Structures are given as C-alpha cells and as structure tokens.
Amino acid sequence: MLLLLTKLLLTLSACFSAINLIAQPIAIDSLENRLQNLPLDSSRVFLLCDLSGKYLTNQPPLSRQYAEEALSLSQNLNFKAGEMLALNRLGEYEFRQSNYARAVEFLTRSLTLAEELPDSSAMASVYRVLGNTNTFGFKQYDKALKYQLLALSIYEKKKDMRNIASLCGNVSWIYAITNQNLEEADRLARRGVRIADSLENDQLRSYNYNSLGLIFMQEGLYDSALFYLDESNDIARKITDRGVISYNNSIKGNIYLRQHDFKKALEVFSMAEKESHELNSREVLKDSYSGLSKTHEALGNFPRAYQYLTKFTKLKDSLLNWETTQKTLMLEHELNEQKRAVKISELEQAALRASREKEIYTAMLSVLISSLLIIIILIVRNNRQRRKANEILTEKNAEIADHNVKLKEANEIKDKLFFIIGHDLRGPLSSLKSLLGLVGRNEVSNEEFKLLAPQLNQNVVGISETLENLLQWSGSQMHGWQHEPVNFHLYPVIEKVINLFAEFALRKKITVISEVDRDLRVHADQNQIELVFRNLIHNAIKFTSDGGEIKISVIHHSDLVRIDITDTGIGIGEAQLAGLFDEPGIKNTRGTKGERGTGLGLTLCKEMIFTNGGQISVTSQEGKGTTFHVALKAAVRNVD
Image (tube, rainbow, N blue to C red; front, side, top):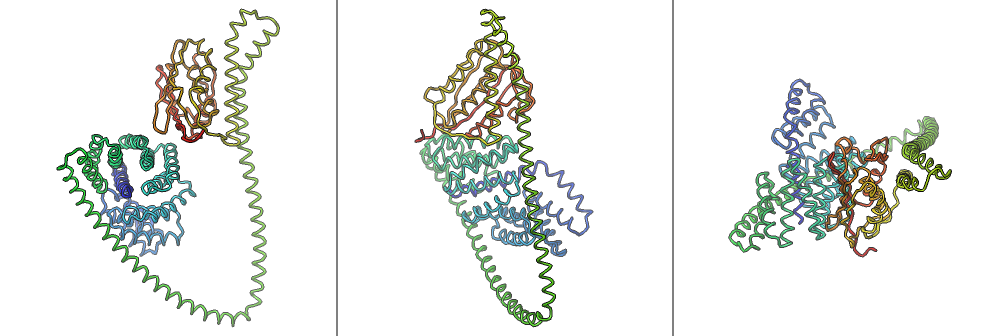
C-alpha cells in the first residue's frame, strides 16, 4: 500500500497535462510574441518563467530552456525574485523527469531565496514540490507530510481555497497510504470536497473522493471505498482525466481481489493496465501487472499469471534501480551541503574574531560619543512612548470597527427577520384574525365554519412552520447550530410529518407513499432532521397539483442512507435550481393553491444536513416533478 501515493502523484502529473493542453496553444503563442519585443529586464524574466510553466507538461525540454535563460538573466541583473522563481521551475522540471536529487538541489536554493525575500507563496510552492519529491522519489513519508503541512498552513493564512483543497487531498493521501491518523484524513478529505463543491472544481472533487476511497479501503469498508472511487471515476470521465481513472481502477482491482470477485478484478486491472501503459504511468502499470498476476493465479490460469509476474518483476526492478540511484545522488548532495556548512562555520568564526576586535575600538570611542548616546536614548524613549500610544489607539479603533461589523451583522439579521415576518406572516395572520372575528361575532354558521376550518388549519400550520423555521434560522445566525446527534429510528419521524400534513394532502387528493423501513436507523440530531422533512414534505404537497403523488424512498449504503422525496408536481426551472439553497430573501414562488414561501426552509435544510455530516441535492424537470435527495449517516454502532 505504501506505493499507492506515488502512483497518484504520477496520475496528478498526467491530469495537469491534460488540462493545460486544452487552453494553452493560444496563450503560449501570445506569450512567445510578447517575448520577442521585451528588453533584458525583470519583465522578461517573469515572462520566461511563465512560458517555462506552460511548457512543463507537454514540452519539458523547452520548459527547461526557458527556465535556464530566466535563471541566467536574473543572476546577471541580481534580481533575487526572478532567480527564486526560475529555480522553482527547474526544480519542478527535474521532479517530473524523476531526477529527484537534482530537483531537491534546485528547490533548496529557491527556498533559501524565498525565505530571504520573504515570499510565503513561493515558500508554499517549494514545500509542495518537496513533499511530492520525498513521497514519490525517496518514499520518506514523514518528511513528505511535514512539507505538505507547511504548505497547507501558508495557504490557510492566505485563504487560498483552491490550494487548500488540493493540499487537503495531498495530506489525506499520505495518512491513508501509511494507514495512520485516518480520522484526520477523513476530515481533511471531506473538507476538500466541500471546498471543491463551493468552487465548482470537478478536478479537486475527484481527487478528494479518491482519498475517501483510500481511507475506507484501509478501514476494510470496501463497499464505501468502491462507492467513492466510482464517484471519482464519474467526475474524471466528465473532465477527461484518464490518469485518475487508471489509478482508481488499480485500487478497485485490489479491493475486488480481497472480496474474491476475480471476474471484476480482472476487468478493472485490465482497464488500468491499458490506461497506464498509454499514459506511461509506470507505478500504476506495475501495480496492474501484480494484480493481473494474482487474479489469473486465483482463476487457475497459471501461464498468464507467470507472464504478468515476469512483467511486474522486471518493471519493479527497473524502478528500484532508479530509486536507488536517486538516493545515492541525494546522499552525495547532502555530503556536499555538510562540507559547505563547515566552510561557512569557519568563515563565521573568522567574522566573529573580527567583530571582537571591532568592539575593542568601539569601546575606546564610546567615551567621546557618550553625550550623543544620551540624546539618542531620549529620542528613542520619546518615540517608544509615542508608538505605544499609537498602538493603544489602533487597538481601540480596531475594537470599534469590530463592534460596528457585529452591529451591522445584527441589523442585517434583524432586517431579514422583519422582512420575513411582514412578507409571510402578515397575510396569513390577517386572514386568521378575520376568520376568528367572524366566529366570535357568530356571523358564521356551523356548516360555514366546517368549510372554513381546512383553510384555518392550513394558515395555522403554515404560520407554525414559518415561525419554527424563523426561530431556527435566526438562532443559527446569532449563536451557530447546537445539535446533539444520536441514533434514532427514521420511520416514526417520517410518519409524524406525514400525519401533520395529512389533511392538507387529503384536500388536494394527493397520495403520500412512504417506503421507509421500520427498522431503519440514522445518526443525527432528531429534532433538526424532523424539521428538514417537515419542510421538504410540506413543499412537495404545496407544489403538487390535485390528484398527484408523493413517494418517500430509501437507498442503503454501508455508512450512508439516502432518502428521496419525489413528487409529481410542477417542477423547478434551471434558473431557480442554481440558487435554490441560498440564504432567504424575496422569493415569491407559490404553490399550486397560492401557498406562500420565502425559501427559508430550504436554506435551513441545507445548513442542518451539512451540520449533521450529510448531503442534500435536488433534481427536477418542469411540468414533471421534483426529487430531493437527502443523504444521512447510518446509525453508529455502540451509540444509543
């Protein structure tokens, strides 16, 4: 398993190549044309480094040529920032050429300059490549993890969400490959998925799904592992990412081997072999050979098993020889660095002796300039007091600014509350007040009251639901969500909600069908989940015409339970789907009988489901109906 991460790094390289090739030709031509007219200054250095990065995956020799030209020009100009960037480009080039020792040499020089400048973004970039080099080249996973975490901490401070999602995947891969700290690996991978969803970045989503697959495989939860690997593959096919697909298939093959499903193992290993051979992903290819050998052996096809075992052994020896060569070069590099450190120490000692001699002369002169020093001390003390006063003033201004921000947020929440109260409660309350006034004045007969009772009940239920949503939402905005997840049976919760709206559904002649098992249990906050289904089932009834049907079905996974609420209603247009779960505002969508709604309930549903570690999505077609998909955690063992 320790080789899996190295395979993924090869896959990652292939993925970037595929993405860059789509849009690069036009951009590269434009950069080449600009280069012809630029003088030999810092702007030319930056353009050379940019071109080096563009050619890195599809024309490596040209990438190295531009990086070397940028390095030479930067040194001539004594342009440290350009020299740092050029060294970084050369380090990544050598890494992708599997010249790991040479890559470390360039990257170390680049890191030294980044620390001197200082440039934290450049430092993070170097840390990331050093992490990949130690993982793929030297298999020093502790050192690799250290570099990846350093890069992640820098991107966290800069709030660089794309790189944070990428590093979440890198770190969770290392934890999964080394079978350590799997709980933290799961947290990071799921965070990477959430960020990828917010960025609508399929590539990052695919990588982090792959991490979840690896984690579940290490835990022996093979069905969940296959589920996430299939999700990763579906996205990879969408973005034509063959490298990820080949890597995922090699992992799936190992899972099917463990499950003794040799037919499936043979199928996915064969696909992985074909893809990795075309992509020249040698680590994935080696694992595919090994898996095919074991699969054919299990099926009794010993000639084919021996054939693939021979291919595996040959490729393994080749990779091992190359790895040994790189480690030897790295040791030589480290020895040279040690010699250089000794020389630097000797120079520092000489400088120290010179410094001491200078101190003697300085002491002799100190008597002559003591009066000047007194003046300087007074000036410094005055400046210090002034600076301290400025700092206190700055802190007070910051406190005032923070208070103003909180006050503004509170006013915004208040405005939203007043808007919803006026928009969604005023009408039903006025109607209710009028009906009750008629009853109080005996202006309504018993027969008329029976006719008005359903409308009265609908107003009360609607007001109650809006108030409950309003209280929950305002509480979350002011204090954050408070939830207590437990194991509970889902069936009685669904039945309770169905009974709550039974009369509403009966008046519209809508059939509500529940296929929820009586024994099905989930792990979440029961009150929050009940509120979610109240909103979703109520919405389904509101937007389904008379005589329609609503079905509540369940799909089981090993650690997830997906509940689908499907109606035959009016459906939702594409424009509405895009912002369906956004924060509440002016949303005038009405039900088939003119029922009001602001979208507050759906906002609550999304926040509550995410708070409980679940997922919610919707599919719809105008005129044919809507399905809301709610995924919850299955009941946790040994938890009441």
